[in-house]
Image (cartoon, rainbow, N blue to C red):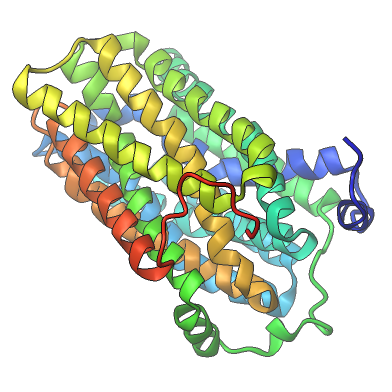
Amino acid sequence: MQKNAADSRSEDRLPIPFTEFIALGAMLMALTALSIDIMLPSLPRIAAEFNLASANDRQLVVFGYMLGLGPGQIIFGPLSDRLGRRPVMLIGLAIYIGASIIALVAQSFEMLLVARGLQGFGGAAPRTVLIASVRDLFKGHQMARVMSLIMVVFLFVPVIAPAIGQGLIALFHWNAPFYFLFVFGAVAFVWTLRRMPETHDVKAAPGGRIGLGTAIMRALTDRQTLTYLLASGFMLGCLMSYIASSQQIFVDIYRMGASFPLAFGGTALAMIAASFTNSRIVVRLGTRCVSHSAVVSFLTIAIIHFLFVELIGQPPVFLTWLFLAALMFLFGLIMQNFNALAMEPQGAIAGMASSILGTYTTLTGAFFGWLIGRSFDGTTGPISIGFALLSLAAIVTILIGDRSLRAFRPDRGL
């Protein structure tokens, strides 16, 4: 297919090859996924190492990172509008590297959680600023397409990260994954320093002269942005509850032990398939059609699985895995397009808008994920009803804010 003029102009603005921009962007985006997923096999060891009172307290290693990630985005996003994308990425990566060192020497669970919070805070910079950089270069369907291509690469991280973490723990110590995160952060820092282009003209862009309060009001008073901001928060809660509970589901319920990374990686492959699918269909069908159809399907499957658990009993492992893989596939179709819909009206303040979106969805997702994760009772019932309630809340939000699901017909607009 021949590239259109808008695509050519956007790619011509890059001083590095387009494929390298996608690869570097994927690495920067992958930092958060890697920082969470590589730790999952360590959670039982961490609980034993620090004598945690409740088995569910191990989930705080996941949520501690998210609590740092949330507020970090509201700081680094506006800074990137004022100072430029590239220097802010480097500042965040430097903080991330320092936090990894603290985690390596932590002598208490509280210190480990502090390090995780700092890791999340530093990791907020590349995550937030990369989205703004893509928004600087691309618009509409093409922005969604580029993000999908980045996601296709970066989503391989959840496939391999638990296996990497498990291998490191088996060979060394429970904190060995932090050595890996330190090296990964250092490589990302050097690559960004040497190759990442500056995509934001601070002097020319009006966003650099808009204050945070004004930006928040602009985002919250735009109906489309607010609608998909709220809906994204509900849906991220589904993902966070799954990540936090996945080790307990596959190991505590189904006794998969060393096979846990395979089960978790398999559901991550479903998200990769969703990203690839989205990159192929979103331009033709539109972001609303794709995401709305997916969120209705998500609700339907969650209800079916919950009823199965309640009426028949805990399903066999393969059926549970199919249920989770299907939901993660649909989640991939939902979130990429929700983010594009929320960001589209905010081009003049892309960095701030990205930080507002990221901060809200991260903190909201972590809160709902924590609520559902803490309710783990040895079955998949709590996570199923949690998925159903959160996706229903997202649908109601869209019906109120966007006035229609537009779920089953192509959408000529974004």
